[in-house]
Amino acid sequence: MRKYFGKGVYGAIAVGKISLFRKKETEVCRHGISDVESELTRLAKAKEKATAELSEIYERALREVGEDNASIFETHIMMLDDDDYNESIRNIIENRHVNAEYAVAVTAENFAGMFSSMEDSYMQGRAADVKDISSRLISCMSEEEAGDAMPTEESVICADDLAPSQTVLFDKEKVLAFVTCHGSRNSHTAILARNMNIPAVVGVGKEFLSEIKDGDTAFVDGYTGEVIINPDEETMKMMKEKQKNDLEKKELLKTLKGKENITLDGRKINIYANIGSVDHVGAALFNDAGGIGLFRSEFLYLERSDYPSEKTQFDAYKRVLECMGGRKVIIRTLDIGADKKADYFGLSHEENPAMGFRAIRICLERTDIFKTQLRALFRASAYGNLGIMFPMITSVREVERILEICDEVKKELSSEGTAYNAKTEIGIMIETPAAALISEKLARLVDFFSIGTNDLTQYTLAADRQNPLAEQFCDPHHEAVLRLIEMTAENAHKQGIWVGICGELASDTSLTREFLRMGIDELSVSPTYILKVREAVRNTDLSKE
Image (cartoon, rainbow, N blue to C red; front, side, top):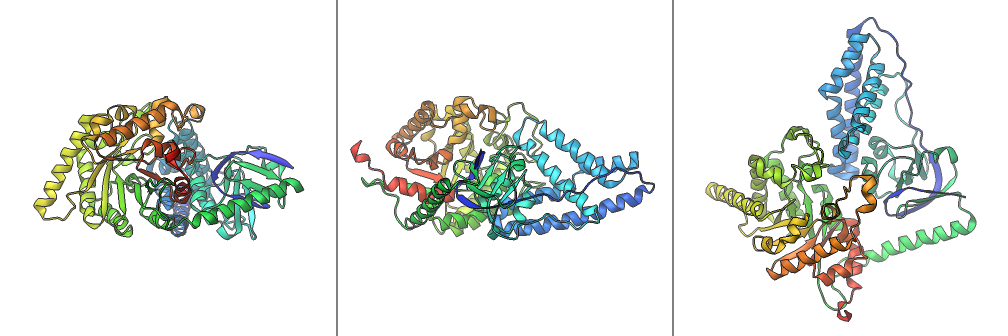
């Protein structure tokens, strides 16, 4: 029996036989060529084939994990057409008179090295993407039959690492869990595993694969990140019991569907869902969300080659509102910047982008982009119960300017005879210490607050949440963070407005009682946590305080 520890990326438990996943590698050799044009033609045909394959993978991902996650493969298609990437390959072929496979391999290494050396975590993630598309391109030029060996029976898939395209192509019915030597909780593959509801542990160490074999029994705990290979009889009995209890608890939570979010002493709280795309509305409804507490609208901007039109945005917002059937839907305006980049915005490199030109700062500077989104939002407000929320607020002046622009947009729509709900609630995110400290003044200007605990924690504790070296300092339970949350709640209620929490801390049931004591009115969490938080609320009794 051997134990390994990594990072759990989806909370579930699996026990089963190991299937070692070995990616089919195409050996790349360098050899000279005499006909450059012929080689460029081979490259062009391989690109066409690779693009067709990625399009098929995108369609499959669209069905299985939704538009938001499927967009990874749209990005891969765009990367195949990237001018710098293609120019590098052509130059190597033309100047060195070498085969296209070798030119692609060299370009892949160069670009991956460049991305890996960047400080920005988002750009570092592009290294894996460029390797993935380059491997596919090389495979398309090979005469060997393409494709990786897939499991034929239920298995715990163990691999060095998994590319997003490989993760999606697995038959979900045959995958009990994923375990990888490398990877992070924020990798595309980890995100896909979560959305496919598959237990997964990443980063168990490079020695892992050399110490296991096909057919070994693996116990995978996606909660703790623990992986046990060939557990002894006593351990296996304990682990099977843990798995049984986990499944029973999940079934028990389902009985909470349709129940109210009321504490034992009669206090009612709203429990809403955080979603990143229109396709996640189904998960919110399935898990019995009272509304949408955070719709991240920037996903309409990311992975595109140009700004989404007013119509594109309007259609998306309208669809969410109609699907929610009168339940509250709070849409956050564009939060581009920091770890979320779109090249066409033309944002300059920043040493510390999390504290730089991002979110509302971009919108107030580029009001044409901002007004397009606001027009789409207010137009959509005629089709449901909409709230509009603005991120990264630090001053009264910002909120006053936002309200001025909102009034301008509403006047435009009125003059055009375009319908909108004039009583649409306007709110702001409290995710900076500055906003929390002046929350009493800000509360006089808006209808609600939503506390973004992820950013509030990193800004309060001066600990970059994207930096693994600073992870130990980024403690959301820190007294300073909790004091700022309580201060914000008190100031909101003094001015008669409601206050919610939409950061990850909202799903931390060890703090549910504390949040209720503070007077928090709404908790917005990932859809899969809704029933868990409801259970915590219903088991709370504040009358004994």
